[in-house]
Image 1 (tube, one colour):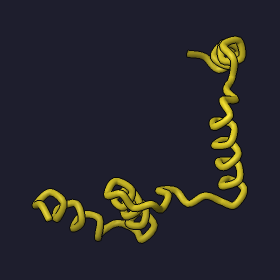
Image 2 (cartoon, one colour):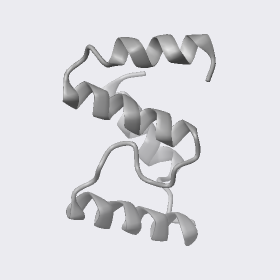
Image 3 (cartoon, one colour):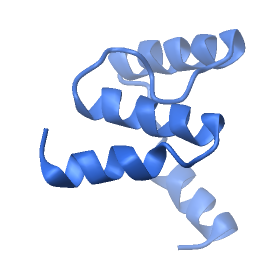
Length: 75
């Protein structure tokens, strides 16, 4: 382990357990762990699965739909 990573871990020890878990999830994600960085609810998992299906079949927003979104929310 590098000195910088040792220092980061030492600093993290002083944080709340919740913050330590957040840091741990990020480190595991960067290291290639398959687990999601942010735990999803079953509903969020289902939404993500549906969006994967939509992507696979090429079901994307049209240019006009995207222009309307950008006009509404700014860009």
